[in-house]
Length: 520
Image 1 (cartoon, rainbow, N blue to C red):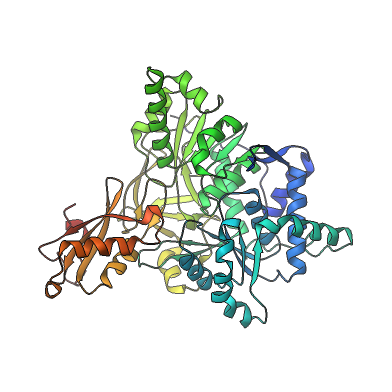
Image 2: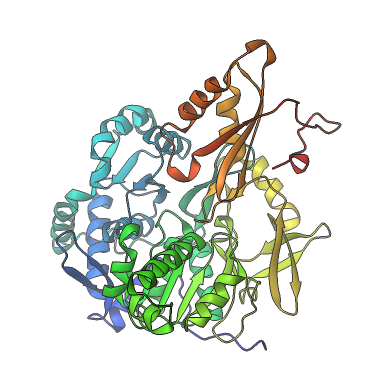
């Protein structure tokens, strides 16, 4: 297709201006809506969203949340999650979005690495709150403070107290001057060395990416993003971009209810990852089988709420057959590409300019080039500040002023294609990043394991182990070890199979295992 000019929208400056602009222009317009536990649908106006953010922010400001205090946020998608993120960022603090599916000990470790002295948490994490406080109290003690626990179940109380302070004339939070280049969000993502890296994002990074992406794709109607808010694709694309489009955004509070939520939200655009689409297709096939008929556009239209025109897909490679299948249903599936370090979007297929198999044109206002070895490099205001307390990692990633993505690609016509990866990072169909070294280390701590390599095959994680000969351990021993390693890991990180090797892995001249030579 032919390239065409960018879509035009007013350019946001920071998250506060983004929030206020819509509240001023459309105070009664629906900002967010969602299905509550009792089945009722709650709608939140733009003015109410602003009022809630200002009330919570004022409450936190009065409690000492200012000057860059680091605070974790953990829990499934919720309106309270969004309010907390805005209240922290707009008060000059640093939000640490955390993966609610991770074991508590992993979350505590990430909070410690991120110097977090406070935690906003959903009711699911209430039993673990004392553990967070006990393990992280030394961070807050160093600042002469105590660890602060902020359960989302108490938000009504916080909002009421904040509103009272506002009514009494407290203006510190509301009038806080935002430094758009300061650290606003610290997002941990898996690295290639086995340790997650803390990606530092500013409000300028995030808002610039919203502005860039909204020039490539235009949206009207309801937007719906079922991806977790701790993931930058889920937060920035699935929620903040929809808000910037001045459109209602439906919050999916439980991924298991997506098909039901489609009937409630009736979106025109949905933001997804391949595993969600794979699940949809399987469910659609079951529906057709029960009805004794073939899949048809009419059936799919009804199952997706009646208005769905576009699905923006990212987070992991997307098979072309899915693009063609959904097109036959009357839904255009537009693949995109991004990475947390770029806030996160770098490219996306456009409403009227797309190419099957590609990840679309590069965003307007963002630069992408292909290095001589085929690696994709990026530069722009959306590129991160760097890795937290990791100057060496930052320098390595930002060589020559360009962010080195670790992905191999090419640009043909004006479309970007992803053709491979330079890193060992495993990307699941749900868009999760898995460092194989992290899992391998857990196997290698066992004395019966001499060598171990983890990889993905057919959607499953597999480990090949070369046993320590002197241990003389039977196969049953390694089956038990597999269960031990998987204990406490979220589903997407569980290794499904052990393969025992007769020979060691091939190594290069420096002694490193050559992964490309492993027979899978």
